[in-house]
Image (cartoon, rainbow, N blue to C red; front, side, top):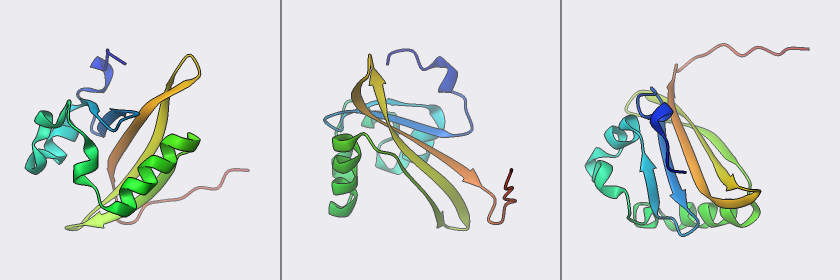
Length: 113
C-alpha cells in the first residue's frame, strides 16, 4: 500500500498499519486527529503504545481472524463513526485500516427493502 494520494485530503481520518501494528500511513485528517500523540511522526512506530490492553486485544483479534470492527463514539460533543477493517494483498491480510469520520449527533437512518 504505497499510493494513498486519493485519501490525503479526505474529510475522514485514514490510518493504516501492518500486521505488527506499525503505522504505515496517515492522511492529513488522521495526522490532525492524532496531533497530540505526534501526528505524522507516528508513521513507522507501533500503534500499540497508544492503546489500552482491551484495545490491543481487539486489534490482535481483528488481525487474527481478518474481521471488521465498527462503532460510534462521542467525545467533546463530536460524534464519530469508527470502522476498522483488514487490508489485503493477493488475498493475504497485511494489516488494518481505520476510517474515522465525524457524523451528526442525530442522523437519519433509512431501511431499504
